[in-house]
Amino acid sequence: MKLGAWLVALACTAAPQLASARQEIRLERQMFVERVSTDVNGRARRVLESADRAGSGDQLIFVVNWRNEGNRPVRGLAVTNAVPRGTQLDLSDPAMQVSVDGGAHWGRLADLWLPTPLGGTRRAVPADITHVRWTVLDEISPGESGRLSYRATVR
Image (cartoon, rainbow, N blue to C red):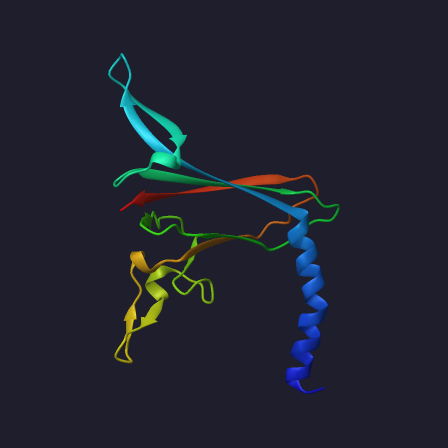
């Protein structure tokens, strides 16, 4: 069997399994603004509020909850989110992968490059990030759930 035909056959057999696994995992995404105020004792108090009134300089917190609602374990779950325009991600999480081309290529920001209008390339910068992704390496048993969160700043 030629390599091209083998890849097509592999893709056809893997696609139903991938689609099935995606349907078994329920994702719930939330976005909050972190507000800091001072209580009556002079201590800083952090409160999460709805992000519908976020403004320049506000700290956003994104939360993604997942749950395996199927009857089989799921392995290698990739949780992917688009990055809202006008935000800058906190890139301190070493497990976070980013994309600067709509999800076609993934890696750490320092390893990504973009083409320039004159035919060259340049290093990607935080403003270029279009998507963020984490891969859950552990097996997710039926009924098991988890959560991840990350931060961004409104520019």
